[in-house]
Image 1 (cartoon, rainbow, N blue to C red):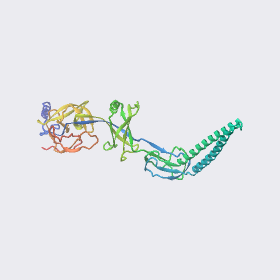
Image 2: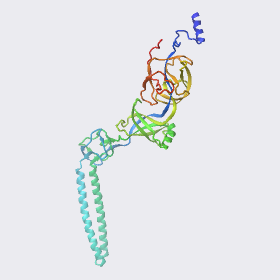
Image 3: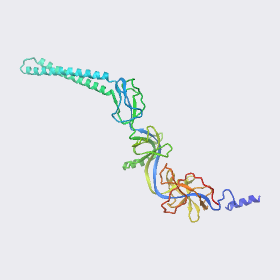
Image 4: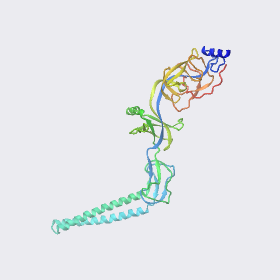
Length: 406
């Protein structure tokens, strides 16, 4: 009972009992620290997007016939106008020759009718023939002229069909898998098609954006600013390609409260593949000259964010409320702390106002200037004095700390 009373007295007096579970070590609570720095903080809008080709074409035959030649390989990159396949042209060549013969025949009849009309015109001037004969010959010439025009149209149609037997690429892009093998009879304007082509350069990414950002994005676009869009892999770790905002859709989806956004990418090295899911990151603006703290230093108590600031003179910590204005990766733009101040990034379990701390004897990773999805580089934990050129932000990545030295 005396021991219990002694423990209760020590708790009420605020003096932790020697060897207690929450008692700070004699040298201070071991913590990791980093410095707040002044810098620029990018403001991103992130969302999951789908890689979408600008053009996707299903190539079909315009004429009926046997597929006799295939001039492409599956997955090949083709250019607009390249020959892809050939339909048996012999029936259409024969029809073209027939149309030529019909046109030549009717053209000869027209020429003869015009010669007769000239004769009738001379005879009519001397009243050698009745007026009715002259009018009939005029009608015969007009009829033959119409016939020749009809024949010319048939000849042009036959020539078009001959051209259709040679199927060429309507756009530049990547050929998909072959849908019809040589030797098969293909139908005109079939629904399945012979092959498909997807344009890969340039290519676009479509992703949803919350309607809250529309006015801000539209404002930047109206000012003529080119907004950068990054496409990252599924793990949101590696940048696949960098492009620019192309346009916003013309309406908001009322079920989700979002608007579709299209960004364009040069896709020079074919980093993006059609229908691939990527993490799209739209850079809206950049906050200039703000206080940037490591994200690991930000603690929360309900809705209030706070940090532990280390007093370099007394080696004690002070709890200070802060306001987080923007986060980017492992860094946060905050108000309430000043550049050059040292904040705790690890070892919060036994911290409170005025508690003495000591630095963990280890090398910890430090945050790079706000660049989300990039692995932070390793840097010593030792805090640099304000204004030091080597000041970096600790990202708060998970650490394995050795036992504090006694």
